[in-house]
Amino acid sequence: GAGVSQSPRYKVAKRGQDVALRCDPISGHVSLFWYQQALGQGPEFLTYFQNEAQLDKSGLPSDRFFAERPEGSVSTLKIQRTQQEDSAVYLCASSMGTGGRNEKLFFGSGTQLSVL
Amino acid sequence: GDSVTQMEGPVTLSEEAFLTINCTYTATGYPSLFWYVQYPGEGLQLLLKATKADDKGSNKGFEATYRKETTSFHLEKGSVQVSDSAVYFCALSDGAGGSYIPTFGRGTSLIVHP
Image 1: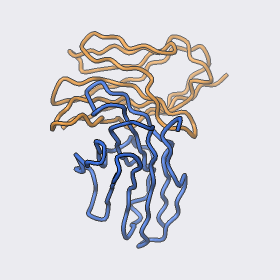
Image 2: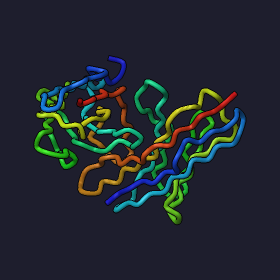
Image 3: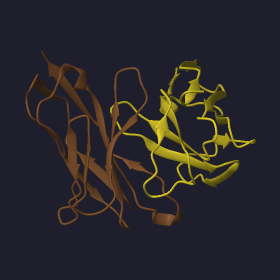
């Protein structure tokens, strides 16, 4: 595709429900990042993939958060037993190379998750 | 750890006014510095970057100079337009911890009135 695509655009979940957020990166991009953006804040790092390998998951806030990228392209961020504090915009970004110092990130429009 | 501090918004200007958005950073290593812009309803997109001290990044009339001595990367534009209304994010990437995970500031909203 032309850009990074995320779905759904909006998700409303009841507290305790499991959710799955999808990211389709730009075709051929090696690196994939997930960020969480709370209202009025900047993106906060969650996890990083290089192809199918999850190289850094230090930003995942709890073991309820799980991400995968099994074939090195599409990625899914799963949140189990959602809590109100999980309400945020979840951003996916991809980059062409292996995440070097000067690498440009391409972002999707995000999934806005509201937990009621 | 790494961090980026941006001036709080919103910044409200009239068309053709001069813009400055302040950004300072703390980094473990020698970072590259970036400005990303987010227009309403869209994803963040790279506006400009600088990779070493005294470099100036520029794009679409925006400029920012990498100042290592003051750990700053302030964004400037000489004459803003209504179409520049957006949220601007300062970011850095320095490889601390072995991988280059960009760290972002909280963003500064710019509103330009006709």
